[in-house]
Length: 282
Image (cartoon, rainbow, N blue to C red; front, side):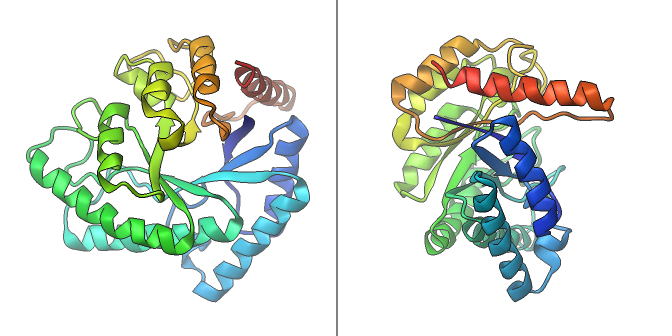
């Protein structure tokens, strides 16, 4: 099992080299590229030939740095804007572009969220909600297949929304029976429901688990804390990954935020990398 962490940078080989070299020095094997989350930047706005060339350059830089992109994160906006056909068409277009970018940088999968026509709160029409998601993902799977990239549907922290728990996501993904549609298990999102991420790993199994978002919380809010700060049983989580033979990256989705003194930031970054390596031991 490898170690990784979420990261983002400008669409520039120099920016990529600086960030990825630093992650390699900290001891990470992989990076979770989250630059495709924001669709209002040059990762999307540059003309297609130019952005493709730059994506491929980013991939070469990563290989030169000795680090792999284990995954990317697809477009996300909050509050969600998926209610109208126009909204969903725009999101589908951006998701398709992100799949192309994921392939170009050399990542095998892209973690994404379900579409949320009514946001993450009350759900007035569950049947229509599911129909919209089935229609959306049936088309997006074809785009993923063409790009050679696996879509990894992420469990969510919204307690009133179906398609949030690992069990609900697993059932939905299995409907399509496609090798290009799998699951991203988010440990913190599971904990918001009072669920054990270790049990979720065992339930999903190696066949369906494509990637991870690893972080902690207090069991109520989605805070993206460093593991061991909150309620999750990390020893059991690590055991579960080894039990199923998970071969991907234990990818942290918690990062140093805010302005910290340089020395404090450096120690925090080391602690994050050490924690990731510890959790791979089983």
